[in-house]
Amino acid sequence: MPIGRSCRLCSEANFRVDYATANRANTGKRPKRRQGRRRLDARLRLSFATVNYVYRCTQVTRTVVPPFGKFYLLRTLQLLQSPTHVHRSLRIFFRNESSFVPKKVLIVAKLSRYHFERLREPELSETQLKMKLIERGSDYNNMLASHLATKDVENQVIHLLQKMNMEYKVVDRTSLDHSLFTWADLVLPIGGDGTFLLASNLIFNNKKPIIGINSYPEKSEGYLLLSAKYTKNLPEIFEMLRAGHYRILMRRRIRITLKGEDIWQAPFHMHEKGRIVGSDRQFYTNEKFESEHSLPKERRLPWLALNEVFLGETLSARTSSLLIKFDEEQEYHKIKGSGLCVSTGTGSTSWYKSIHSLNHQTVREILNLIDAKRSFTNDEIDIICSMFNSSLRFDAGDSKLCYSIRDMIMTNALPVPKDVHTRGFCRKAIVKSQCFDAGLVLDGGIAVAFNFGTIAEIETCPEDSLRNIILLD
Image (cartoon, rainbow, N blue to C red; front, side):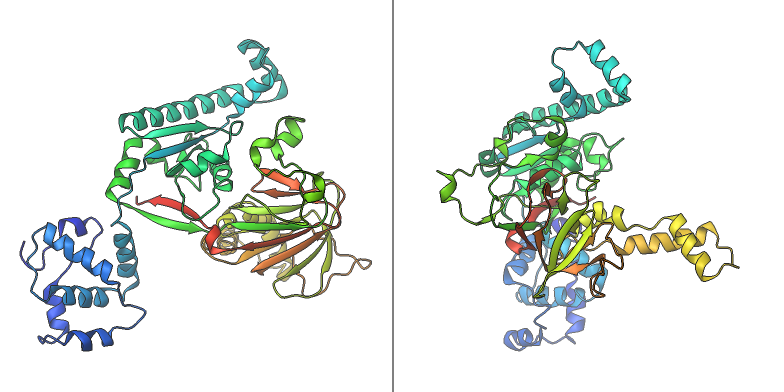
């Protein structure tokens, strides 16, 4: 291949090695290797492993490289790294060098609403179940269509794994097993965002990769899942993994440490709290202790929240009383309201956004107070809402947390310090419960009791991040 032509392996990432450009940048002279290296800014210096990989690409494609080719590759990559768009392309390109072919896949299947209702009413015939759901106001046809679509995608994935001779196991919300998450090379939730969140709660380190498939994109947004095009072409997922056409997004997750009495009560799922009272909850934890006297007064929860943690009374109509402090604050602030929500960057597009998003009515009423004589158009209101709501989002890999005090009560009898805001950023939150029947809920699912006197420390750590595989569209 002549000098300056695109390498076959590199061209797939829109990367082009042009040695002539490198020669011109160096004014036709070959600098000394040691002197040239000293010129490289430390922020732009590329590892020798990366350079060697690009060099190997040229050997595989028989690209003609001068004897000092490695140096010019390094110099050329340095020159190309300045523009923002090129830098982003290079980052994607270097992600592509590792092929990933999992040997053991854990499928976390969605427990569909239809399947859930069928489990609740096993003695009813299909016709009887349909009539009961319709009388209750449920859309039976849509419920069944979602269930069938999910099972169809699940079966297609299983058939594909069998064809590729990959070992696999299938679990759902009723059959979770911690050991299987350790066993698997890849965790593959199939369903919606809720299924992805459940699977992520049970991955305990930043080494285990996860990638989610949207089983019913017609009715599910699937913000955390692959785009709908992969649902229709499942083999392409594993082809891209094998080819290394993916990137890794390290999503920060929330670690919770409880302190106090009664912190070892059995966890429950919010679905169980309202629907399956008294069901077996032991699959959510494998912690075992000999007696109550041996229980420590501090407990790091064995689950990690990807979106958010909520702390407040289980009964939503009851006021939640909490003592809170953030980061390096020494004193607690007492607040009353509808609970506290602490979100990650991933969760900033979820509940956190729903709590704080502006709507047309609110913006129009505020603008009318500012200038009652002017009539604002819908387009102007749209722009304001869109700009503000977009500003609520922050990066999924950011180490900061965002807290939201829901419906905070502010009266003359209950003054709130001026430095306490209904929302804000922090690195760590410490919350002491003043509630009587409260819960600490992770991602709207797994929950533990959080009653009077219990303290929760909420923070993020790099080692708790979720290794999310993102395919390149």
